[in-house]
Amino acid sequence: MNLTVFGIGYVGLVQAAVLAEVGHNVVCVDVDAEKVKRLRDGVIPIYEPGLEDLVKENHAAGRLAFTTDAAAAIKHGRILISAVGTPPGEDGSADLKYVMAVAETIARDMTEPKIIVSKSTVPVGTCDRLRKRVGEILTMRGLGELEFDVVSNPEFLKEGSAVADCQRPDRIIIGTQSPISEQLMRELYEPFNRNHEKIIVMDVRSAEFTKYAANCMLATKISFINEMAGLADHLGADIEEVRKGIGSDPRIGYHFIYPGSGYGGSCFPKDVRALIKAAESVEFDATMLKAVEQRNNTQKSVLFEKVHQYFGGDLRGKRFALWGLAFKPNTDDMREAPSRVLMEALWDAGASVSAYDPEAMAECQNIYGQRDDLLLCGTKEAALRGADALMIVTEWKNFKAPSFDMLREALATPVIFDGRNLYNPKTVARHGLEYFGIGRQAA
Ligand code: NAD
Image 1 (cartoon, helix red, strand yellow):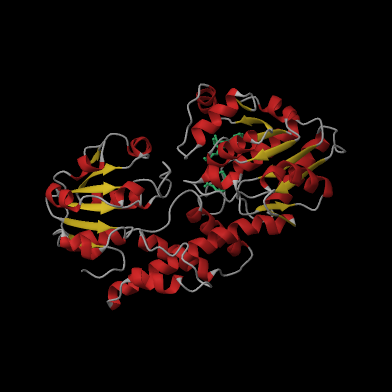
Image 2 (cartoon, protein in one colour; image 1 turned 90 degrees about the horizontal axis):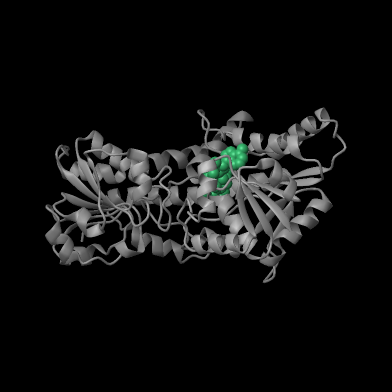
């Protein structure tokens, strides 16, 4: 099938590559000419396990092309997938300017029937708005009879395992009331639907809402366990024991109840905020979502507060080793990452940072540029040398079993502030280091 994908970001690029891999002919279009040029030259703009090979192989095989020529790309695809960003606007609601721009571009150029697929996370009612706008433009062009549909098909991939998630999706949500659109969307996803039925067809608004409800549910689980961890700190319990105790109940489960430094990334923070805004717009008081967000904002400062207290409220002139910058492992994405809140608080308090992340160093440099109080180190060991404490912010695999003796010798003060509860406090204590986790008691 001939497909077009608008927006070559985390979602657009991964989904396009995975769709090309099963044999579809995919043209990707982006307004970022530099990104398009680099992709044509084989430079992959983001880090995702398995993505580079997949993009290069399918590009070389002629099934995956990159262009800035929207008109040609629109002509190519029977299905036009829009995967552009929906960043938060000033008031926290989803900013739909890119989504609207894509729909308008399509409406101005299309001359044959098309199915426009909204893959971006968009507020309930957006597809209706897009349908109306496309219809208006077509009417203005004298093509009011031209067939088109706007289908909601939200994306559920997780950064860090995006390729695998797209290759083996848990579910494929299709929001449409048109039998023709449903049939074409089924054809599109047929290769991913062989093992068992994963396609769930529903009305457009419910499909749009499903995506927000899923992200808000996951964010709620994280904020819940973080709140329990804060309480455990005060009540003298160990949240890691509690986590196992509650996770063993199948109604609760072990997933997404790891206490930490708060959720970040490009999705949870903005989607929780956007749903709060959507609720406000219909005068519905989303009390729980507001609490989820508030807890998360507080949580991002917990590690800083612990360090601040440990050093008697004076961090001036101190240097802290940070392991992990990305908002989670296996990605270079630092959007809304807890590491940013932590570093900025440390800098404000007069401290400096020596940091290491396996993938997000370039991104960190892009965000903060050159500054005296930020040293980006080539290895995790180099970040440690002479630092006043080690702070763990991202649970990368190769942070999980360090040599604690080496840590003790390298640090000026043998103390670890573990924002991901990677270590057993007893093990760390045996090696002569002090240890502060999230919701854990000292050994
Ligand atoms: P992104 O910012 O990484 O990429 C968006 C791309 O769209 C950019 O390359 C940008 O240049 C391009 N673009 C903007 N306007 C355009 C236009 N008019 N025509 C063509 N290209 C244009 O965004 P992302 O992280 O891939 O997210 C895209 C959407 O998917 C968002 O709504 C997001 O909420 C949702 N989503 C993201 C994830 C994730 O993990 N990142 C997961 C599920 C859903």
